[in-house]
Image (tube, rainbow, N blue to C red; front, side):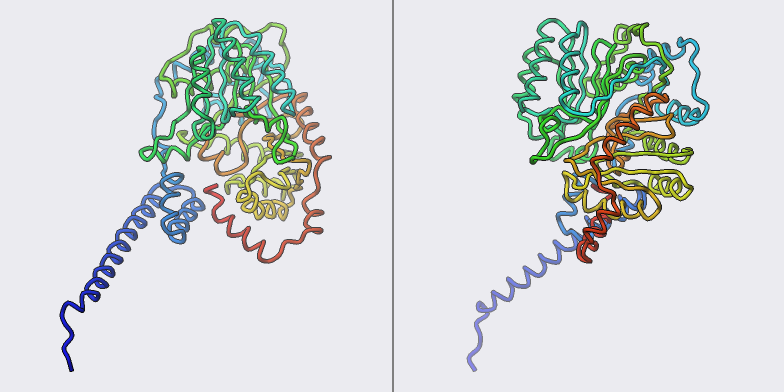
Length: 491
């Protein structure tokens, strides 16, 4: 037999090198994944969120690591705003709160008011006049009218402002006031406006508008910031008129999307609660600009013509707070309700405490009603939310599916005495990751008006059980939705 030349075995050596390289990469990858899993465990997050990230890291190779870098790193303990600065920014609100004469807090909600006051510095203000805006035409007409009448300052904060006809109209109105010498400040969320060209904002800056992005994302150094976004929608004009609610600045809030109408709710406020909206904006302004604004001129004496018993708190929540203020508020409302709680949310992926409170209230005989869109604008969220909707229905919650387009409203009303509207969805992201803001209103007239909004929306809904009788999901569909629910803490 003729011997095989040693040079002919070179391919064997190459294979061995490839095997060694494969195992080296595998070991390095395993070490990275194990390190990330250890970090997730040591963060002591909610067990559901911890398990969701562990599953992603194990069963979604490589992509799971990318998702973790973008959305999983826990930076909520970072102290973005110092306590001293918060004290100074809140001082004027505290001073005006102390000066309120004859402020009588409703006894049935005294504990909830105290909760928000102690945890969020959200002081109750009396004498508030509220306009409820339920479509984009009404909201943007009122907003542009108030912007046009501004004399001293305009403070606008939005998650999204699009470079579309409506966005350009609002931008032109802001630039016109800036040229007149009015102070105009704009905060937009960097991720919410990812697809908006920089030239759109530069044009405003060149006209004198002071524009800042909230927590800009610089790749690859600050990828964890993608997960913590400013979802607030606020506006203050001259310290006398304030807006808070669910509408961003984009054409879809007027024309809808994909041929479907868009339903939303925003509040226009005159009275003491404008101080709360102003304070929320100025805290965020300090974060983006490092300028401390607390002059009395931004907290003018309110119109004496607004005199009623409407008490309101402007409550904010954020991932840097020690406690989840908004989630705690929702739990408290559900557990102290005597007769009913009606809720609207575009995305229903509740944390376990909120889900527990809903089940407890419904099983105790409270009329709990939940309204969600029949079809979401985010398919993965829609799939993940269905098992939660079924759980709520099984516990006795009356579920309504909004069929007349997409309902983006975030509102709640309870017992003809309490209502809230703002930017907070009933989902993990709003309760844990986003910077949110809601107006909590303690007034019978306002509660009845919000209740009427809910009742009007019910006329555009189909009951969940009626829909399910006509559209029984297949086993494969139910399995897929259950799998999506596992990842709901990350959506």
